[in-house]
Image: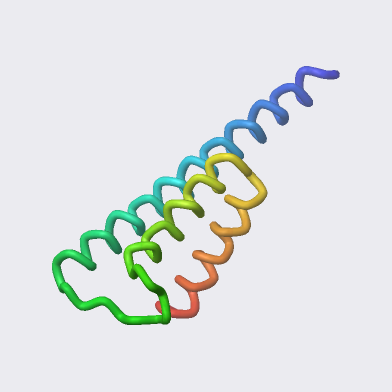
Length: 89
């Protein structure tokens, strides 16, 4: 492999690692924000769940998956980017 290929591979690995960590951090912040929101507002919407606090595990599970899988992290990043563009543009 040439020196340029090695540079491109290391750049790709760096971007994939950074993206994975960024999405994991974002989803963990969402988890902490939702946890804080449940305690502060003390209003829990009943969605047919026996324990509403189980809904808090969804963002935590997504955070764990994004840390493990770069492809899943890229998908969630594109989804968040699309939602951001829809809401703010």
